[in-house]
Length: 302
Image 1: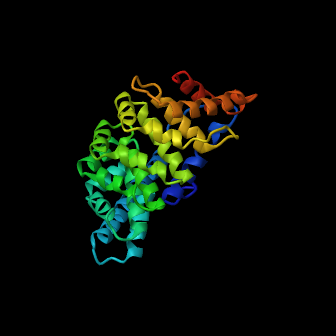
Image 2 (image 1 turned 135 degrees about the horizontal axis):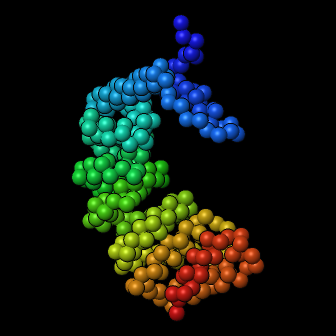
């Protein structure tokens, strides 16, 4: 009879197994590699297969709920949460698409219930994060225009839409093209007028990341992004502020464009703010990023 410790075959069991069998690597002695014996290997393979099967069964149940128009809102919310728990794994995300579940995610973006809409957007965001297969699927399915409309919705819906948009744009040129074609820049800049600091931070960060791409940088400038961003800035530096940092980050990226242009009032405001930043003692040490962004912008002021 084997005296080996028994393990559950769910995710917790796998983690417990790996922890127990890698503790020796933490010891302060030379590592001695030893091939896993057949019994341990069989357990691990069985557990992983079991976990994959369980996830796919959960996906099937979730899809059956999402596709049923008569399902209760609470059941659809629960189904979306179940899907969300697993789709940060690229293989599971791709399997969910291949199983036909993504069709119902897209349908859920138009649901009357705000929680369902938000969850659907978050699931799309997590499936598409650094995943070209899912990015391509959602772009081909014309999901981007639906998500861009979320930016006009109440804060929580807008936030979920922005998260999904970011995932579809990240390192993915077809997503960026779809964003431009759907008038995404104008809708994104309009979010800066909401007087919501959290939304401003998220929007400015996305603008900055997109502005690292030369063509998109010029598109933002042509859409008057500089003026919109300058309006978000305080007149003087009064200490660290996340909104200030991300706004300066966005402007510093835009300042790298040959099309950079500010009018007299914008230039005066920027000069005053930047002087109050760079004039602070120890600013470079305490708030290095803000200092660097300010210096980058200052180089482009008249």
